[in-house]
Length: 224
Image (tube, rainbow, N blue to C red; front, side):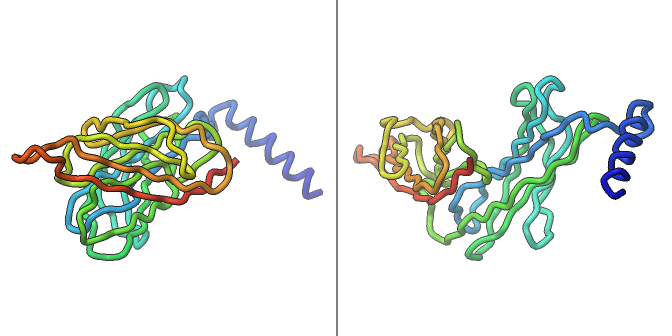
């Protein structure tokens, strides 16, 4: 009887949707991904990013993203800007407090009848009072296949190049920074991996010597 009742309910919902009595889920799989550097400096603004994706046939998502702490405090709301068919991005400047870490989350509020709201997984960046030459940035949910890894320069650190390593193996050589970010696509396999980025500045001081360098390491789990 229980299975029969569920079947009848499903048929009823389908029939109502067909005549417009209930809204159809036109965009299955809408996702929101929060991108935050793995280490940030307290008191210095850093950029929070949220990427929203939906079915490409419906074009880029529209609406806003609100960034929150895990303690229920809103950090602000930003409008989405289209980045491609089925994708859009929102960004917000955030000044980390003097705490060891703050859990962060992003919630997408859509516009339009076919859009579906979506909430990201939590990000937990480390916070330090010391300058951060370079930090890693990637989506919080990692799955097998192509993943974009980004090395983000800290405030005041000049243009340069970054070498990426996964499990001790570097395969790209130096990647130049563009607007403070160096990036590459990693063909990830399932399991736990260690990512390392090494940054060297091409900026010069008056004596002609390189002024800065640094590295960042993060262990990640890639799901099948």
